Structure formats: structure tokens, C-alpha cells
Image 1 (cartoon, rainbow, N blue to C red):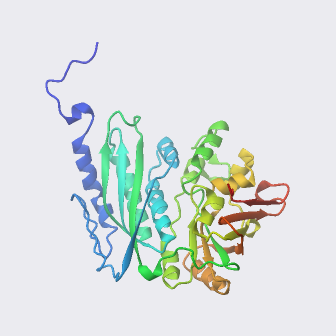
Image 2 (tube, helix red, strand yellow; image 1 turned 45 degrees about the horizontal axis):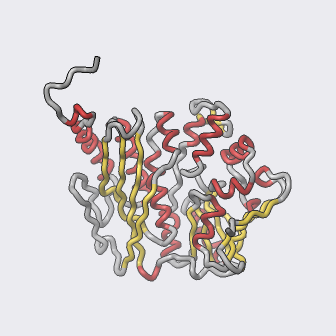
Image 3 (cartoon, one colour; image 1 turned 60 degrees about the horizontal axis):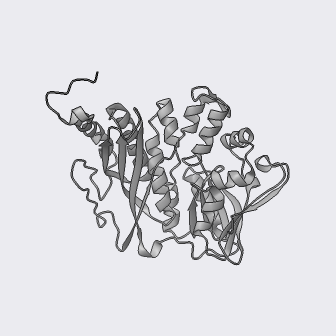
Amino acid sequence: MSDPLPPSYDYATAGVDIAAGNALVSAIKPAAASTRRIGADAGLGGFGALFDLKAAGYHDPILISGTDGVGTKLRIALDTGLHQNVGIDLVAMCANDILVQGAEPLFFLDYFATGRLDPKIATEVIEGIARGCIEAGCALIGGETAEMPGMYAHGDYDLAGFVVGAVERDQIINGATIKPGDAIIGLASSGVHSNGFSLVRKLVADFDLAYDQPAPFDGQTTLGEALLTPTRLYIKSCLPLLRSGQIKGMAHITGGGLLENVPRCLPEDLCATIDVDRWALPPVFRWLQEAGRITPYELGRTFNCGLGMVLFVDPDRAEQVIAALDAAGESAMPIGMVEEKPGKALCRLRGKPGAWGAQQGFDHITDEA
């Protein structure tokens, strides 16, 4: 027999806890306030959020916006109960994207959707978003928490992020000045970042691995903790170089890996030739390659392979740029050169025998179809 009808209906009867939502807003206000920056006061609770571009020091600004999520990496956070860092991933995926056009991230908004709101989990996630905003130098200026019974499985949630940045009109980076002979610099990633996790999770499932066991590639931490290493933010290290005009183009290495992302900032008649022997494939990618018998081509179009950002600079400035990036806390390295290639902009990955698990050398290029 079904439960008797309630004497009266309210929102809680339908599974929405207004009190929990209000409690969450109160809990996250200190986190939002910690992201305060010039131009924004990081206040929450209004219908809209304000940002003062003039106060932030801009004279002739162009606004650049971006939006993204965390992808199926979020499933690992849900399965392990480790929610503290996925908010950093959310900010990084958005903020790094607009950085490549020269934009300084100014403010960020988040969207947190769940079937039944757990204020503790939501607070952990949003506090992570605030940490990411602090690292990116932008204000957490607003957001939305949606409790939607029947839309999500018990305990599940989803995230989306939205960032707005600005760049002075004469400092926009579009890759138009990149030319043959320019140097290509790679900035080390912190791990898998937030792409390719559908393949990662399939390997974990097919090999019957547990996220609470030691990572096969790092015995000092669990597999879940290692895979949830947050995406690196490159804003504070790269912005000074962008503003000084030393960087001609940038590519954020996200979905599509090196092969698909690098050409996005190149003029159509150029090819970025990258020698993968210039850097060591990090342990997590070596494990993925060996366990999944993943070909170099598939590695290069699925994962960042140890490089979270790729920069294009004048060859005479390459050493100076690398030194500045290293001084700012990055691990920067020369990885190749721009070459002339009539037609579609391309990326070529070259490796000697033994590179990326290949017995023979390889020379893979972006699909021209």
C-alpha cells in the first residue's frame, strides 16, 4: 500500500529543502568573500552581480567569456567522496581557456545541480571553486544551486562554470603573428587535468581496480586521490608575458589533446612540429599507455600527455620566456618549432623508437579530413 497523502503539500513534500539551500548560501559566503578583487565585492544574494571594469584598470577592454564543466572526472569524485578539488578543476577549465586569447579572468559564476542537496558536499565543492578563483585572480561573484528531485540519482550532482575576462583591445592574442621558425614552449600539466576520463574510468573498471587502493603509478597515494589531482591554472605565470607582448599564441590542451588543440591558434598555412622526446611522459600517462596499450596517436589526441599549455614565441625570446615561466613556478620546456605547411593548420607529433611505448619511431599529424 502506498503512503497516505500528506495533510498539506509544500516544497519539502516534493523533495526540495529550502532551508538546506539557505544554509548553503550562508556557509559559502566566506568562501566567496575570500575571492574579492578590485572591481568586485564578491557579495552573494542578489539577482545579478556587478563588476566595475574601470575600477579594475581597463581603458579599452574587450570582454572574453568561457564556460565548461569537469566531465566524467566528476564521477570519480562522487565514487570516492573526495569533493574538495573538483571546484578547482571547474575554474581552471574555464579560466585557462580565455587566457589563451590574452584575457585576465575577472569574475566567475558556478552552477551546482543535484537531486537532493547535501549542504556539506556542496560547501566542499564551492569552497574548492573559491580556491580556484583565488589562484586565477578572479572573483566568485555569483552562482546557482538547483535542487531537482528525479533528475539525478541519489547523491549525484553536476557542475558548470562560467568565466568573464577582459583584455585591452591592442593586446588580444589570436596567433596571427605566428610564423615559420617560431619556438614552441610546453608548460607541464599537473596530471590528467579534466579530459579523457571516460577512457581512464574504463581502464579502471576493466582491470577491476579500486580507487582506494595505491595508485599503480604512485605508491604514495591512492588511485582516486592521484586521478583527482586538480587541473593546473596558468594565469598568474602567463599574464605578465602576454601583456608584455612576448607570447604570440597559446593553446590550452583539453579535450582533443595536443593534436587537436595546438592547431586552433595557428594560421592556416602552418604546422606545429612537436618532438615528444623533449619531455618525459609523466607516470600516470605511462601507466595508461601500458595498461591500455594506447597508441601514440591515440594518446596525442585524447590526453595532454604532460603539457597543459603550449606557447608560441619568437625564437630569439624563447630562453627568456622559459626563464620567466620557471621563475613564476612553472616547469617550462622547448618542445618544437613552427613550420610552413600549405593548407589546414596542423600539429605533428614526432617520437624516436621507445617514445610513448612505441617500438618504432612515429610521426603523427592532425587528421586533415
